[in-house]
Length: 266
Image (tube, rainbow, N blue to C red; front, top):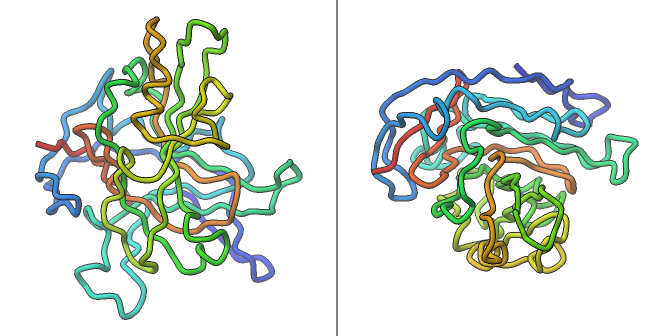
């Protein structure tokens, strides 16, 4: 379990520890993004709910990426909008912006799955997104687009490049409501995407749509494939909040304090 503490009035995180995610099935509440209720039955090469946790090699500093109960909204938030969109829990994320001796000095956290999406084709990614708990303080720290990301480590398999590694990153649009859970944020139609490593024209400096990113990886040769899938934050601004209901195609990953519940859509 991960814990945070206060040191000199500044929120800092304790050392990173892996969170064991149990495969738990239950009845899903009505989805805030209109998806049918349902339970999951595993994905790809194994039982998808078993393999989620902190991706330690992608962790910088001492951030928090921990399964937790709530948050249940700030005071004055209507009851219907207060709780997580699925179950009673979520994935809590906390990163600091100036806490390491590296350049930049900010932290980075990835909570994901290094097993079950390995080898999937990038072109088969169709439905992606999540719900986020954004706060007014996070907007103050880094602006209205200071939000977590969806990240897929991939093998681009581009014929004219020897590089066999890149990361697809989704940057959400601004969330207008704060101190409560957002509606479903659709990563295939909103926000923008980029690839690390300058493999294509979809770079952090010149981001593109999801459709354009997939098209940029199609050079007629071997197809781009997924290595890992994750939700993460950093390295940029301080952010303290939560994510729930991560959707990847026909699966919704419900983050609960006692594990990750995989729910099937349809």
